[in-house]
Image (cartoon, rainbow, N blue to C red; front, side):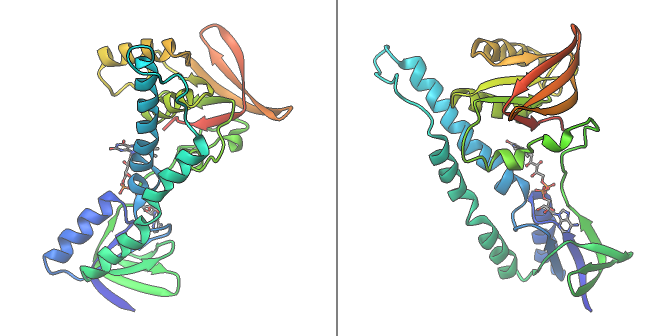
Length: 262
Ligand SMILES: Cc1cc2nc3c(=O)[nH]c(=O)nc-3n(C[C@H](O)[C@H](O)[C@H](O)COP(=O)(O)OP(=O)(O)OC[C@H]3O[C@@H](n4cnc5c(N)ncnc54)[C@H](O)[C@@H]3O)c2cc1C
């Protein structure tokens, strides 16, 4: 049995802040993660996404300047190479992160943390107790509760794709879908976004969303609003997404269906 002032569950942005601040104030601190240290933002979210979106932005700028002083018609995204480059940022994160905690005097543990009673945590063969436990375990994709949802590709899995499918459909019109949709379009895929309500990107400024929506469609990305996925089926090597839309039941065929619905 090991005793601490604070046990932090998770090693992402939320967990790190709490762990380092409490340690600096003189508390004894333990931190636990069931996955490699670093959390979503650095390993499976913001940071890898920014490398990919950066490449998409560059391609777009090059294409727009083609014939205006640049000869850039042949610029294209090499998906496999870009993915390998993206991973060079994430690969060192877990070791560097864990060493950072240890240097600060924070005890590090690996495994799924489980409460056995208030203030008592079991992780692997260790039993830890603390005055406080900070739960910073992040979020996971919400279940859609539709038949065939096992066919969905999560954002984690999207960031591991070594090849880009020809047709990609995103369920849900949030920022993850829009960013990945634009990247996939710039890399050469045919892209569709299904969104259940009238407005995608609901939490963002509506004037900007209108402009983005217009531009998104100009690129050739299909954005189907008021279209709620009701079922995903496998057919001849591809997927068929059935959706209830303002124009009745519709079917969309795709080679990959990505969960971007929160
Ligand atoms: C594709 C994508 C792109 C994004 N882009 C942006 C962006 O550009 N800007 C932005 O601000 N945000 C972005 N986000 C959101 C951002 O990544 C999250 O808001 C942020 O990472 C949440 O941090 P957190 O510390 O709360 O949780 P996380 O970073 O998810 O950390 C939680 C940790 O807890 C661990 N854990 C869970 N359960 C247990 C358990 N029982 N025992 C032990 N460990 C456990 C997990 O393994 C994980 O490492 C993006 C997210 C995604 C998925």
